[in-house]
Length: 331
Image (cartoon, rainbow, N blue to C red; front, side, top):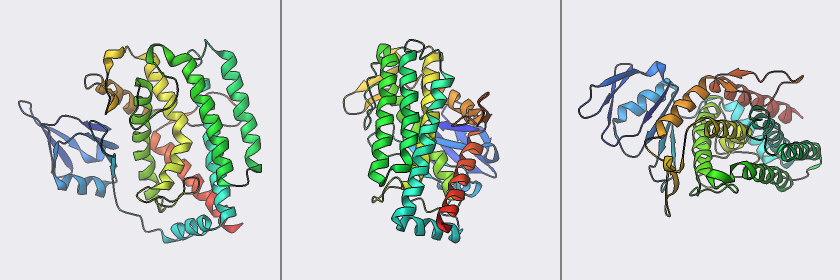
């Protein structure tokens, strides 16, 4: 269950095994913590400190989103796991340039494979430009073939960046009207599509970070994303693998939901934001997506795209990252 708290006058308290949600002039609601998969808090409601401890103890990740996007999103959850062998292995590979490159190459490979998901699942959206889709898929195939020859992290990020730019250019051909999308922008997002992509990536990052911590990794130490003060690089690495899944979700929601430009608001300092009245529709769709999510790439042999819970898919990919790390460390 996804719990979204987005009204300033809300008070959230912890009672035995549950959260009690109180709003003026409304009956209080009680939500069992064991039913929660993720909590998203907008703005500045009153939340008891006991709530955060209870959620951390239960392994429920929480995301604190600034209402106007002026402050960074905060991710809360349990503390670091204690699987020291995993962390030591991670540090050994990160400190070896060759092994770091192997891990970064795996991340880019999985991200590129994921681009097949929105192109295949949203054929009606791309019907106006089938040749563009074909050219993009050819570029993905050609770039995948170049990955083994990439001799540095910069070379990998260059290849990945070229495909990402081509992907957003393709989206521009089908989303320029009515959404004014002509490429990726952020901090702040300047159009509705970018506003939704940024929100989707934030929600996905919260899920990914939780899985990375549970697996025992050091979140600060990545392979594709380099060390940077105040940044958790490994969750950003794993997020790359799931960006195409978020893109598919956002594109599908835009395509299938009755929206207009009044569904969003724009301010120069804050950029484009989803309006409060429409926000519940987005989160209801995200909750469905968490329960029934397409896997980020098609299994060998083609066929239907398999679905599973988002947590299961993310945990599976994190375990594959750990397996690749073990093989790399032994090599």
